[in-house]
Length: 119
Image 1 (cartoon, rainbow, N blue to C red):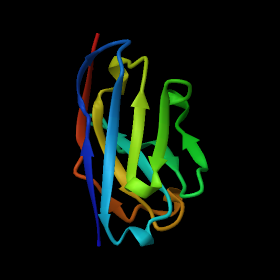
Image 2: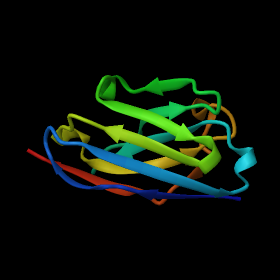
Image 3: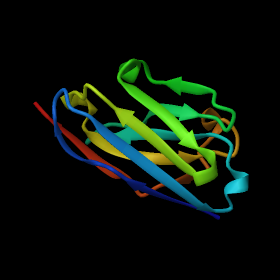
Image 4: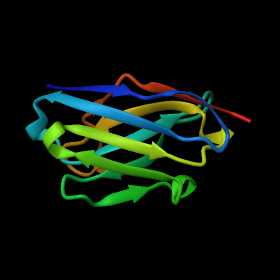
């Protein structure tokens, strides 16, 4: 079993920054890729960014150039640096652990952390 705990959400004005973190524990040897997804009210959950154990990164077009995903493997921690935030970035953000690439399926979800961007 893998447990994921997210931190770092909150309320920020448009143009501001936030950094999310997600710490994994448990059977972390089973994790290859990790990622961030988000779900806004009334919308489906969508990919934000993923990163493989070797560092292959994929971003949603809507966050390219503004968000940066990174991971610290020795600390089993995933980060998402979010800059130039927009009101449309408002959503619940979920950390995800994947046994292979996340496009093939998410193995474990975190509990989510709310990000609210005011205009």
